[in-house]
Image (cartoon, rainbow, N blue to C red; front, top):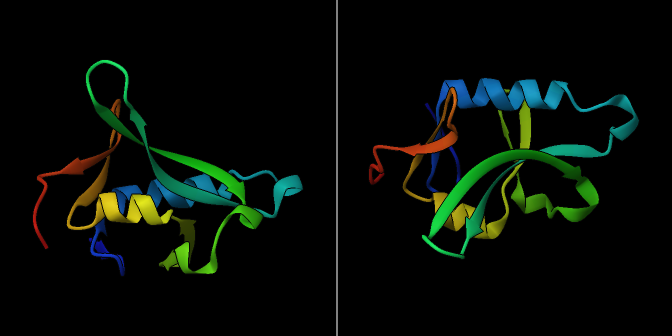
Length: 104
């Protein structure tokens, strides 16, 4: 388990997925960084889905970039608020999910 400064934790499994995503960024996009984020789907039943993507660092603030065991990734301020007090994990077939919703 890895603690993030905004009150969330990520599991070793999720960190491994972020590490793999970082390694897969094509060399021609060396300015890109892995991002961990949440997307809301407001139509119909409310739903939030966490995802892993990559964007140019030019769209990120330095204070939103985190390094855990040599893996750098960004989390937007809104997503930091969403993740605070949760453990984020990676589950095969489901992707990034909050688990057990523990208060930390």
